[in-house]
Amino acid sequence: MLELKNISFGVENEDSTKEIIKDVSFIVPDEKFVVITGPNGGGKSTLARLIMGIEKPSSGHIYLDGQDITGLGITERARLGISFALQQPVRFKGIHVVDLLRLASGNPKLSVGDACEYLSAVGLCARDYINREVNASLSGGEMKRIEIATVLARGTTLSVFDEPEAGIDLWSFQSLIQVFENMQKRSHASILIISHQERILEIADSILLIAEGRVRGQGSKEEMLPELMKSTVPVTCNRILEGGVNNAD
Ligand SMILES: Nc1ncnc2c1ncn2[C@@H]1O[C@H](COP(=O)(O)OP(=O)(O)OP(=O)(O)O)[C@@H](O)[C@H]1O
Ligand SMILES: [Mg+2]
Image 1 (spheres, rainbow, N blue to C red):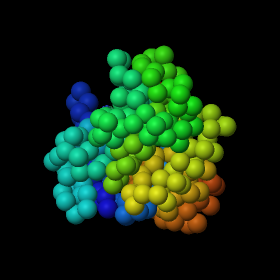
Image 2: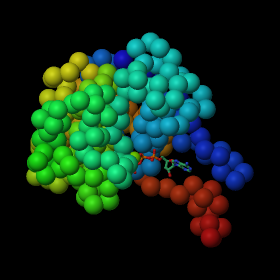
Image 3: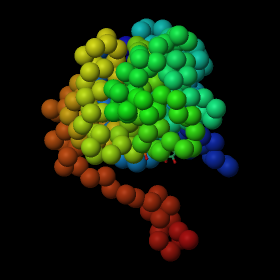
């Protein structure tokens, strides 16, 4: 179980601190599928980076299975069983897809057959990709799928996916949904997905709405979906509101 308790995070501007995450608390229970959604710029990817250990909160604590992991780095958290697929996957020039899957699985002898299974699960024709270099020649959608395949290969306690649907074509989207459903059925792991997609929200055990750095709602899909479908988020510019339109430029 992952628990975020009163997490806040800000970045230093020239003369002030910009609060990006404000007193956020939530739980991802064992074997559950939690989806975080909300408007652009709301703080979802920042939360993912805080869970991963790329950023450290200014206050609050993060617990994994009761252990306080707030002070731990990325590698230590990965060893404890957290794995990630980023919104924008990192490319590794010089590394081939099969090597990346072997690295991810922690098994340098992972057979080509097993590696191919992970690629097939994310809708890639394994034969065409297994020996490709993980460089700029891969398209955005291909890269995204390869990264999801590495998370499958790791088979960890908690898998976090930041907008896995981004760049994935409509035809492959259905099979991506199946990947998550199978993952949930097969492993006893918890899954945390950041997504804007209704189809992904529909398969969630619970949905968390994050906007302006705060938890704006949380509940089962039955409770949350109707609200989400009818809500709109007002766009405001604080500078204009505070200073008046004439003072804003
Ligand atoms: N290092 C930083 N310096 C300044 N602002 C930042 C920094 N990191 C994030 N932000 C701001 O924090 C807010 C939250 O960003 P974040 O990437 O977490 O949003 P998001 O909810 O993932 O949005 P999206 O749906 O577009 O992916 C944004 O306004 C972003 O510009
Ligand atoms: Mg994001």
